[in-house]
Image 1 (cartoon, protein in one colour):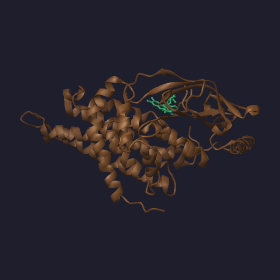
Image 2 (image 1 turned 90 degrees about the horizontal axis):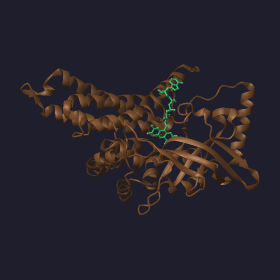
Image 3 (image 1 turned 30 degrees about the horizontal axis):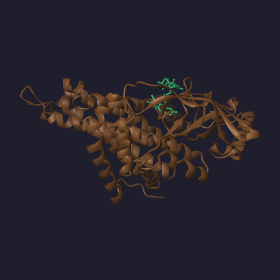
Image 4 (image 1 turned 120 degrees about the horizontal axis):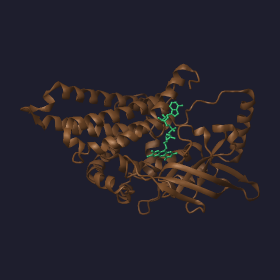
Length: 404
Ligand SMILES: Cc1cc2nc3c(=O)[nH]c(=O)nc-3n(C[C@H](O)[C@H](O)[C@H](O)COP(=O)(O)OP(=O)(O)OC[C@H]3O[C@@H](n4cnc5c(N)ncnc54)[C@H](O)[C@@H]3O)c2cc1C
């Protein structure tokens, strides 16, 4: 077990500087253009792939770090650069995590690299859980997976909503109900390989923020995938379904919503990067902008805002680092993963709003980035578990009760 330590090692410090350079030189200067275009930023992702920042090696290196801190440190820098471009670079990681979390070692080796492709031929992955009628309530998925025993194939039907990289990804990981009567425990994850017939993109959403990230519906119409595309394999699924049926008869409580706990510090780190970016702009501005004959920071009303922003940003980072470390070393006890995502995302919304206030009229225009950062921050209180769902997970963890 690695010791919990707030000092980054030399490798982590180097990585932080390296990602920061890319964020400063490539992402920040291009952020406004891609926000305006509201298109997937292929050239930026390709550039990230060329230097090794987008790709399987980068993810394996970060995932293999025993302290757990490498990933949040890198993500904070990326999202400091820009959240929309950052999400375009990190989006495939959701699919990779879905495969790593549920697949056999053979499936991980076969499919995770295909979520990234190579530096010369970049590919994307998408993780498809949410549906028009099932976002927070993931136990109510309507997408069905039916086994065709004669052909050893699974047949998928349904519509997925708000999917990052949906329809433009090469590898789609789809969560579907095998036995809907068992709710969450009757579900399984499937790989839909590149070019599979029946999978298409539905509407592409126009969004409030992170506009460079592609978000769309994914329609599954009689999609047939080979039996080997069931993540974890049929034997494991059959055993899980049998256990769930048995538990149903004995009235055993459903497990708490822990599934995403381990990836939540990374989402928190995204929000943290945005908050820090806005705070730094506001601090510099407040020292330079003169009103009533003195820099505006000389007013407590402005200086205290900045003091609060700095405090909340550091508090968020400590929660994220603790949760990232716990995710690798010893596990969560009191919903620490949720605490980090909840606090960091609410902090990002508050801090970016204060940054606009400090910049006054300039803050409300596109000149200083903070207007875009405020729009980008908001998604973090919604996706990967809304703030209310994080509170629910924490409340259940600390009470041991099934709070509704
Ligand atoms: C830009 C973007 C990208 C996304 N990317 C992906 C992706 O790649 N893959 C994917 O699968 N999904 C993705 N999502 C979907 C996202 O995870 C869901 O939107 C989110 O989980 C919320 O679900 P919902 O929209 O159905 O809201 P709802 O669940 O309908 O919630 C609406 C409101 O009710 C509250 N609420 C619901 N239940 C409770 C409760 N029990 N107690 C208290 N309050 C409650 C919520 O907190 C929220 O405020 C993405 C969404 C967006 C906008």
